[in-house]
Image 1: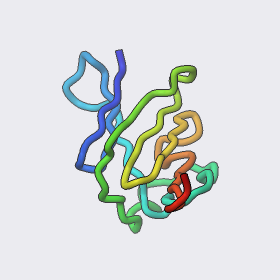
Image 2 (image 1 turned 120 degrees about the vertical axis):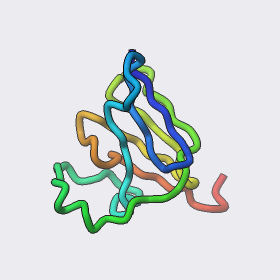
Image 3 (image 1 turned 135 degrees about the horizontal axis):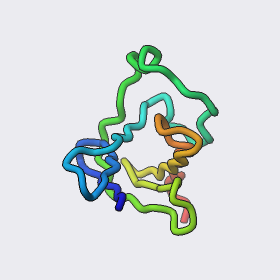
Image 4 (image 1 turned 90 degrees about the vertical axis):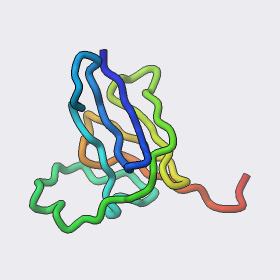
Length: 102
């Protein structure tokens, strides 16, 4: 009964099919735009106030077929891997491909 949506407003939203409001909104911060796993921590709202949100459209999103707590998205030429048991605040892994490599 749950599904994800992504859009040009740079957010990913988790929905319940019986609700008109999202259960959660995922939004990456520029501090996490790097090609390595995010550290394991929970940050409060106060610490996040200084972060600038990435303002790039999310072009695609897909659940992992074998784990309902994992999904990946494509945003601004990079792939973000979200692992919800690790964190709902930041992606677990952000990878930006090297240009010219095939």
